[in-house]
Amino acid sequence: MKPELRRQELLNRLRALEREWRVDELARALHVSPLTIRRDLDILARSGAIVRTLGGCLALGRTQNAVYQQRVATRFELKQAIGRAAAREVRSGDALLISDGSTNFHLAACLGACGPITVYTNSVAMIGEFSRFENVRVFLLGGEYYRDLYCLGGALMAGVLENIRADTAFLGTDGIDARGRCLVARPAAARDTQLMLRSARRKILLADATKVGDGAGIRYGALRDFDLWITAPRLKSKERQRFQRMVRIKEIAVAES
Image 1: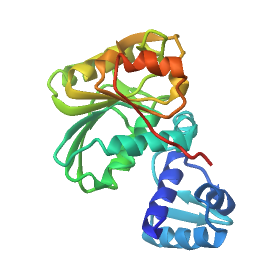
Image 2: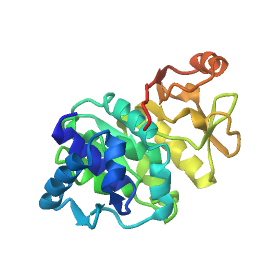
Image 3: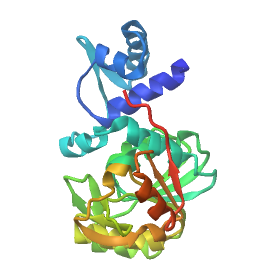
Image 4: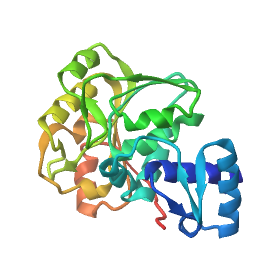
């Protein structure tokens, strides 16, 4: 990995989980020597992106939100691979609608090289990521603030969504049942996501295979509503055959550390 890409990968990890990271942790995660990590951290510290600590570092970024950060950090490599694959679906000049969610956060971190784009999002957490990229014009969808999810939603946002037409919507889900229905935990989130589905020409679902089989929640749509589902290659054979009749599936290889 080139040094510039490795340092960007370091920043992605530091921003995803805002806590103190040890040099040896980062070295293992990126498969390089502690000496290499120390050099990278010195460069990032001089740029003002991080603060060095005794034996490690801290990122300068979002306001602390432990619940959200834990969700982003869970299955980090898997979600990151999905985010990278999703970014390859973006074209220069696109208007994107990106819903909140821990997997979609990883997409936000990968949009810096996509050319000039416009992003509409209800995610407060992603603002810090977009602020790093001069090519991204950001519109934050208004609404009620949900502290645990680090996002906005509700009736105020619904009025805004009715007037938006995006090229591509990137949406997530809390669960996918055996019938291919996409579920979320809260009624308000179901209404918001339904409106997002209607507000874009192309719809892409970002969800790893651990979401399959969870039938608890409120239906906002189905796999048939999407043009593409980007996931990791852990679907069971029968599930894959059944779901491929509903949506085109792109499975991303993931090498987890």
